[in-house]
Image (tube, rainbow, N blue to C red; front, side, top):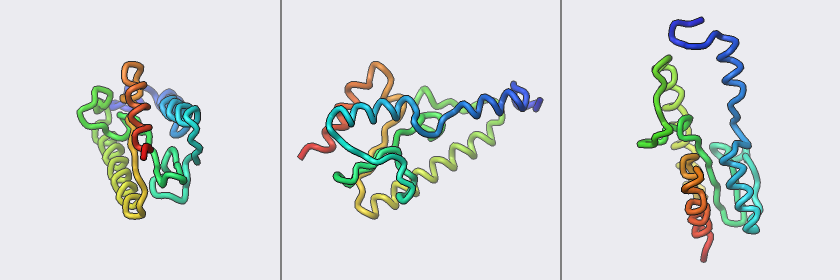
Length: 140
């Protein structure tokens, strides 16, 4: 067991393997909402920069649903830098932030509307307000 980690390698490996990169609860919540509103979309289009979680080709819109921790949501109570292996985690998170910024720039350059939804915005108290504000993006 590493001095910087509270778990042995096997336990840490198992814990990390349980973390999903796609089809997360927040992602499924947004997809279900959009589908119920009549929107049709593509998922995780590898041809687009950043492989957006949801692609609405008809509206030339992409939606990223970011986990507050993994994408370093500034001033969010769910983004707390771990006390162990701090440098490694900060490098990982800052790399994610840099990749996000690069993808958004490339998408906007190609005339895509980019919407980012943070997982904290989908907590029970805020979810209805956030999802309905999403619809306003498509009103003409």
